[in-house]
Length: 543
Image 1 (cartoon, rainbow, N blue to C red):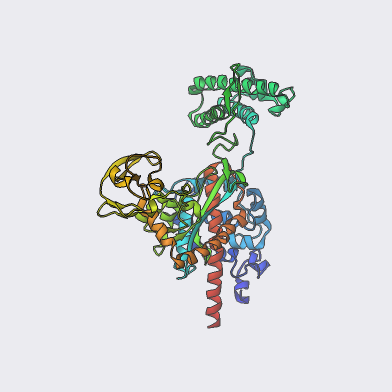
Image 2 (image 1 turned 135 degrees about the vertical axis):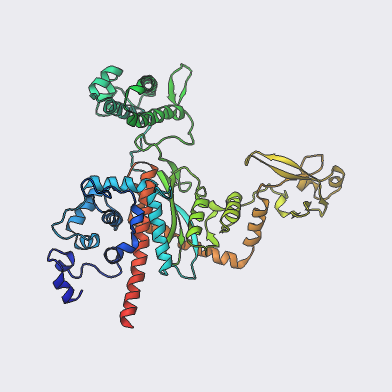
């Protein structure tokens, strides 16, 4: 900053106090110099304080800057980010605040985060998603992504914010949480609710501390499960019967807790020979892991690595590091389930995307079909493995003419006889080709094809047979396998959001996790954009 400009600013200005606080190429420098370009006013339409009446509200541009700065380093709690904004010179310069000016309160930042999770009135799209897409478009327009871009997608675990609990605590803590919610909804004390429900557990400090028993004794422990389950059922019946008496705004939260408690009973317990409810000797696919975070699930990164919470999915350019789309799903979801949505969003921002590298979890034929026909994008991943008994021949080595609807077996006999047959796994009907019995009777490959069947051979196609065969044909090419080796660089693409706090959720539920993931990715993309603009300024001064 020149001496003349320093003389024109206030002595309380952060850049007057520390002229070198904004280092070119950093995110605070970018927010201070180009904030109006990054955060246009139409993104925050509907934020409070826009009307003439009422007291002024904090400008949305200051709050969204603070939201991005919060994920500096490994991220920080909301209150810690506010405290840093009070004392950090570069942060105050980025926010446009002078020393002595107040900073937003924790409640204001929390309200703004809730505002960003709402849908924009004109597009019906979550505001955090619109913010992320706007930053991606800005990065693309300013040349962050080059012509040598290589797009890839992957997922990584995100641990949930709520405490992971066993079945006893799921039921006990769930009852105590329901009691507190009911007391607030009815505007009575917790002691009054405990007397009304005849449930001393509501007043205890912990669930297990409320029972005087030996938890190592299976009989005593089994009795606790049965007692808690029956208390849950009785309380839920009372709550549902008296639900019309509470305020409508409180009903949704109370019902959500009731459904969570009943789900724990349904998934974790079963009846024994004596009619008691005991822990089931099975694992429910979609069981709850936390009563405070009911959308979190058990997940598995590999056979030996498990986690509890969510999965963060990213799609971006492994060369530049730009993340074009991101999503958070429950931990038990398949890695490839949000891939069509990620590809569609990225394709809408960057029309040059023609191919996306991914690991074998994204190699399903249906995903290939949807990506190709909906987004015109090819997913490059190894084809699904083929496992056949020793000495058996499979259909994938047979030739098919999809135009003439004919199929040639391993013995070289072509048939055009086919019928429709149901596919149980996909819920559709597929073609089934058939060869006559007399044709297969004298074939030298009969045992390998037909096995012990005495009738003629028949082959049922996959619903996405073309995609499977095209994937195997592409994988035979050496240049395709060479390109696929670039997929290992996707680990860097995933590691960047993790490095800024993406491993641990900082709020309850999928909504808060999605907001956090998108803001972290915005912060990462802003870092790329800051370095790009700083390089341009340096070249401009040198010229």
